[in-house]
Length: 337
Image (cartoon, rainbow, N blue to C red):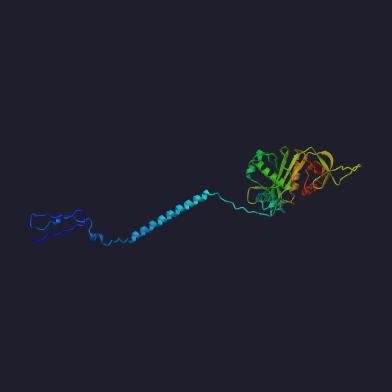
């Protein structure tokens, strides 16, 4: 008899024992043995990764690019949102030497370096040199505002070419767009002449005479001259030099511009409170034409004679005094507003 084989199992906690007395002389049934969970040959076999083809590489790279673009887009959106939430900053400049300057073109004094003063000067200087615009908006309201054409088709030699100008009169207290235009014009005139603003009571009894010239290649016009005339009751005669009475006291009234007037008041129907002509259109006879229009049309049906003292000026400036003496030939009077 052959010896029994000894079988050792390592995958089970309980050893397998053969029966003590086999039923037959055949070899043991090895088919009933349990197979191990994993074969050692499979565990120890090297693993091989599948090499990606060209299509998979292109797909992977495109996915990476798309992902990076999305990240960049999100980052840019966050940056824009953060910039929009932050307040915009303004760069300020500290100027030490701010000097007072007087413009030689418009005689306007302003502080050089001050933003508000320089803006106001630029706007005022442009108006003083070129005048204000009279457009279709004002022309549409002409009948409603009481605009009256005094003289039309005036052959006028403007800067460069001959044009046909016209003179109109407007109530000084007009409203609407014409009133807004007159308000801007009066502000420019008062600032240019260093004169106070006229009171509403004065504007109520006043008329504005405007000298309009056409703008080249347009249907608009430009206001290059203006006179504000008002109803008055009395004025003073201008005297050549101060007169002294017997007791030595002064018998004259001194007004601005080096003028002297006698204190006695004389009846005078019309007074000129403001006279203005744009810088680029001076010495062309505009002031004389406006004064002639006032003397002929201010009092309906009556032509006033300035040489007889029927028109007075309100403390004229140096240029206004020259115009007054030349036009009135010594007969112009002075009145106080």
